[in-house]
Every structure is written in structure tokens, then in C-alpha cells.
Length: 117
Image (cartoon, rainbow, N blue to C red; front, side):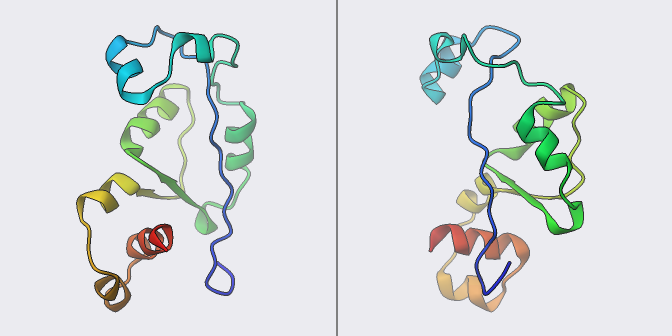
């Protein structure tokens, strides 16, 4: 963080799953088999993961919604991030006022506040 601004790098892309996407998942996430048919299969050496692995884990925070799901997926392909992790799902479960966030700011609160600003 420099001058109260986060240095962020975003990875938001599709990968071809190793199994078919269920109708329930298609309805929930609006991702179809057609959208991923020509995409790379996620692997330990995929470009975003290789880049992320090169970062200092003491200076890196992985932020994701429902992160436990994503961490399980990553662990299944042999990629285990050692940095701090923040689940924005937890931010959504515990909405608090801006004043409260400022008064009792933890790393989780800081990220939630900055996402809200």
C-alpha cells in the first residue's frame, strides 16, 4: 500500500474445467460450456499462478469471493498460496458502518473499506 492506495493486480479469466459444468452452476454463475471450450486447463504453471507464486508472500494478500472454494481448487492442482487471504464473502456477511471500520480497522476491514470506497 502506498499513499493509502492498494497496489492491485487482477486476474479474472476463464479456464476449461476438467469436468462438465452442472446446470446448477451454469445458472448460478452464468458460465456455459461454450464459453470455456477453447480455454486453457488450469494448471500449476498457468501464467497467473506462476506470476502470483513469484510474489513475496509477506507482502501479498489474495482477495477472492468464497475463497475456500478457490483454494480447494488450487490445492487440487498442487498450488498452495502461503500469503494472507481475505474472503470478500465474509465482508458481505458482516456489513458494518464506515465509522466502525475506521475505528477498529484490521487488515480485513481495510480491504473491505477500500472495496466499498
